[in-house]
Image 1 (cartoon, chains in turn blue, purple):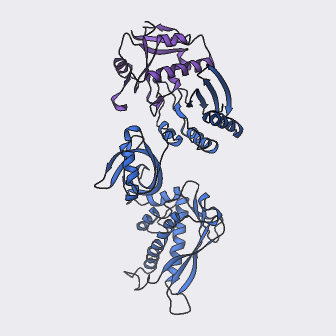
Image 2 (spheres, helix red, strand yellow):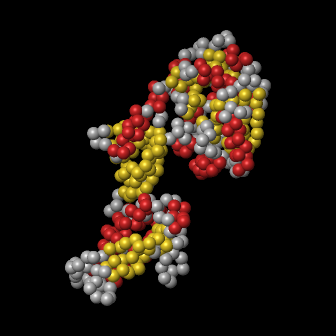
Image 3 (cartoon, chains in turn cyan, green):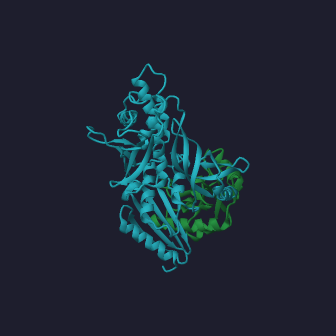
Length: 374
Length: 126
């Protein structure tokens, strides 16, 4: 058996820091072996146009194996193992190396909006439906190539381009996370539907998730919501069609901030008596990020409502106080107002919501009131 | 109108979360010139007010909450008939107040309305 160094892609992103690869990501790499073999066969036939098929035993004994993880935001060392009776690698190895190079060239072509079929056949594009399926925004698999100044990057976006470059592919799979309620559950067929912003999406109900899903189904009218993470099937236009599998289910706090802001993303201008301005999507992203960064998870969550001017009003009802924070999403500032309902005394303060100290002040206020110490 | 007259306020779908309504429900918006539109509950039922708001006016409400004229007066907020838009139209006048005083009064009215509970909820939200 010959062991030949084959590929050392660099995994970029927070998940791969400290030279570690999450187990869930290994399945994204596993399909690489299948793809290399198929492209190697195509390469051989391309160079031998008179042949109908590859030589007997062309792929026998060929395996790609993870032999280690090297430093540098996690670099899996993938070696090619090939059976050989001699001291030298078998002849077919050259086609597997060519296949590797062609796959990387295809990724580069997709990145540069060039022809992918110059490098690999269209029938193999579908492999990218599984390679890098769980890649998240800001993550990439980088392939360094000699004589190329910067590495070739497989990102979520490039992967979509590669999959959808095939006219035969009507939909693609991608790991996704959604928040919704469960209006339907079918225990005979072990499926359920999740309602996401008015759209129902079907998903399989695994035994281990059934109890939680049926509980959420029974509480549907109480607006009981879940967060699902799994592999979604998307149309070519990027619309979620169904779930292929569910990996994780989390029960959400009824006032979960991300879920509520998702609801408010659906608002359109005119939402209030024809004159309400819808909050901007990117500003809701900002609000969610600062909230996650500065507001501790163990404090009471606020109610969140849109304002007619396109902002958000957070409200806490913590007896005897009624508190509001009117958030100007454009200016990133908040008008804090606290009413003591026992004596009608009120307090106000303008907060800079980009400022950690102002958030700290807000957190202290809520904390003191929640602990009954104010 | 008497002190017991209920002033009916329509609830926009986005202004209720987990059954809890925002204090903005009882605060005039900047374009309202400090006058909050409500229906005179002596002249129209909560259900008919909801139908008028969603039908004739073409707006969107998930239900009706209310404060009384007396509760408004406790907070120095006069309720004034304003039949120009439609016969049952009344405004709660906040014009004697500004800024945070309006917020405080809106919160007090919100509490009164929440204590009273929903007068009407559309079938979809029940």
